[in-house]
Image 1 (cartoon, rainbow, N blue to C red):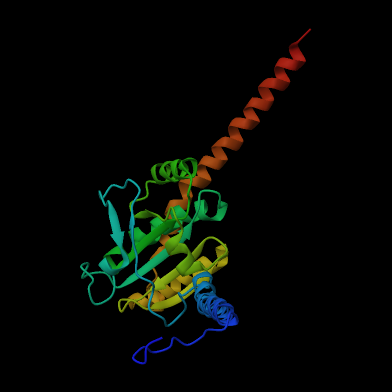
Image 2: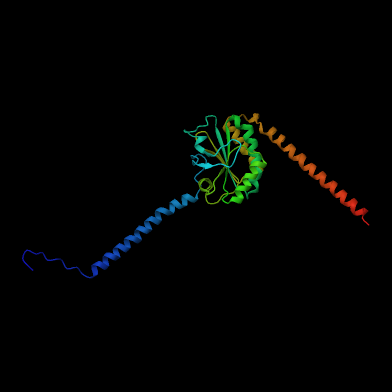
Length: 252
């Protein structure tokens, strides 16, 4: 080696192995760090983010066929600083599914709310969490059967439902959202008795005095044809039984 040449340092055979071990430990540490960062996010994704006093999670979803010709609707169209519906004051947001019997019963009740308080600024919006074509076809049939005129939206991938309901929540679940876009009331898996409670809450949000409720008359008038139909069916069955009994008695 000439005097001008610099001798290369001798590297121990163990050094590359140590470097590989350090790199491996770094990968493991990075993996654990990523997992620690992701776990809280996953927990937050499963937990509902809509609670009383918090901003209602924004969304836009496609709509089932409806008389108003609405193809899609976003919550921000109705409430919040960017609302385009200037007459809207309160949104009653209900989550439902075709396999939920109380949800089907709820649809005509919400229609009466829609008809009774729409002029006062109530906007009823229903979100179906059905994922299969069969369930979606049932929803189409229910809309036609009950002559629903408020928008029913399709949350086929349950993205919006998870933000409001979390991983699991009873159906139907109802959220009352104020004009400022914040959640005012939450009802999860409510009963028939609770429906009267959130009716009063809607009236309060709309500024309707306690003694000026108009839904009682609307409910009674809507229930009368149903009661009459039930009585007609009972009378028809009674007549059919009499005919069968008479035919059986006269048989040889």
